[in-house]
Length: 177
Image 1 (cartoon, rainbow, N blue to C red):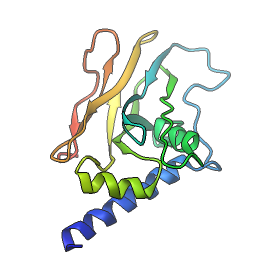
Image 2: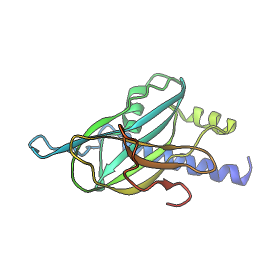
Image 3: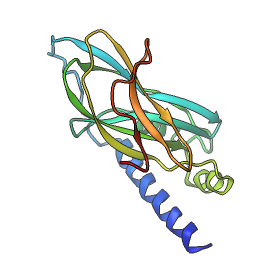
Image 4: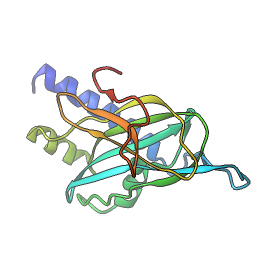
């Protein structure tokens, strides 16, 4: 294994550890809309694209204002637990208050096992997750989706209006974060 491959593996394992921390069962998650909140809200959904029975592209909101929220990386990890090489994608939809917020977007490839990370890396189809912070001000009663593009050369992530496809945040690339 070359030095470059070793460094790539180290980076992948670090990002897998981050994703595992985000998915931790005992990790309390922040509820963006508290039970007693009566103000205006919008919906923000993650975008999930299954590429095979063992791999998917996930574009998620991982944190709001620095607080961990339920997201598709964590939910899919939990749904896939103890199912071998089968990935069960659980794409998250959540209500958010219609007010300015900082959202940490996470985009990348997900597999249910480390062995599959190695397999897809060898094939050249695995894209390491990356995260970026964006400012987002949702409008009440609108539906938004985290979306983007993934490639080994450059990945990009943003939030757009689900109905009009209007880009609501800056588009941030993996090489410009």
